[in-house]
Amino acid sequence: MGEPVQDLAALEADARETIAAAADLPALQAARAALLGRKGSLSQILRGLGGLPPEERGRVGQAANRLKGEVEAWVEARRASLEGAARDRSLAEHQLDVSLPGDVAPRGHLHPTTQVEREVVAFFASLGFSVETGPEVETEYHNFEALNFPDDHPARDMQDTFFVEGGAVLRTHTSPVQIRAMSGREPPFRFIAPGRVYRHDRSLRHFPMFHQVEGFMVDERASFADLKGILYAFARHMMGERVDLRFRASFFPFTEPSAEMDFTCLVCDGAGCPTCSQSGWVEWGGCGMIHPNVLGHCGIDAERWQGFAFGMGLDRAAMLRHGIPNIHLLFEGDLRVLEQF
Ligand code: PHE
Image 1 (cartoon, rainbow, N blue to C red):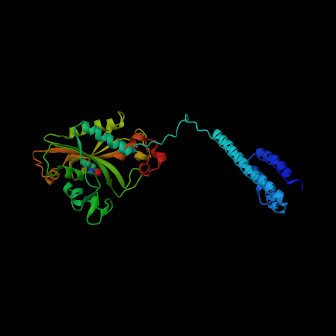
Image 2 (cartoon, rainbow, N blue to C red; image 1 turned 135 degrees about the vertical axis):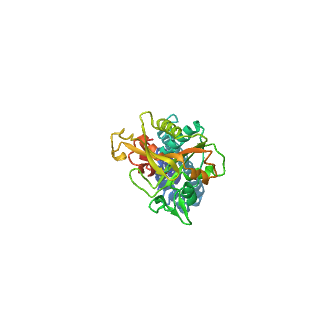
Image 3 (cartoon, protein in one colour; image 1 turned 180 degrees about the vertical axis):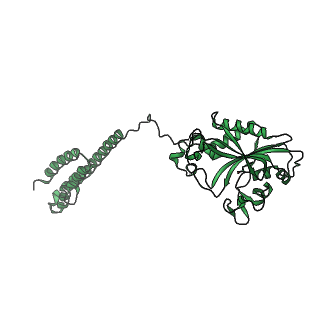
């Protein structure tokens, strides 16, 4: 071992250089350990102080402690500069380009049936009809009895109707709204009532829950001719000029005379396809002159007042308008389907 103070001078020059040359934090850590670690060269000098002659001990001790403080300061300075450089590098690499276009949030839209429903309401509003509603869980009185269904009518059968505990039913049509809207009121009336209805039925064109719109008008002269005129205008408004309507004499307990109406199948333009069972026509709904018994159940004088009513499927209209071959597609909630409308 040479002269301790000279050793320190050499160590100092060496330490300054190694620390300055440390290229990254691990290298700096290693350089610090080589000097100040348990077996580091400066630590060894400090540990060896006791073995020095007393007259040297103070001087060497002082110099070694000063160097130790300096080494710590150099290491800290180098660490700060390495960390700063690393930060600058990472900032330069991960630049944020605020001029890039942002992510556009996906935008939803109304269900095709809702679109049809709103158009129906708007169309009839333009003819002076206002909207009435009724409950989906309905009494048998409103759903059947007041609508002149005899007790043993097949529509009351388990086959078609969902019965709810306690004697209520899920309404099988929107016609009970006629009773609710007319009872206790004085004609004239012009009402429509869109809403959900339920039937035990399932096919390409049927689903156990679907939507209907009921419409009815009562005054002193409302006629079947008025009814047909309105329905033609309505069908063309909804489905375009190429649609044709067909009325077939039919029976409903609550209308007399009654008709069922079909419109041209717009999936095949009348040529015949699976959606229209090859007939070229799709059943749309029923209509007729309101039966005097129904007016009577609502407390309306059937000698003085008369009117017509119609009820048709809204989903049906949505399907046909968009050429959707299967009504189930409308209610399965599959976004790949719904996003197309
Ligand atoms: N309520 C009948 C149905 O659901 C349709 C209808 C309404 C018929 C009004 C005549 C008058 O089939």
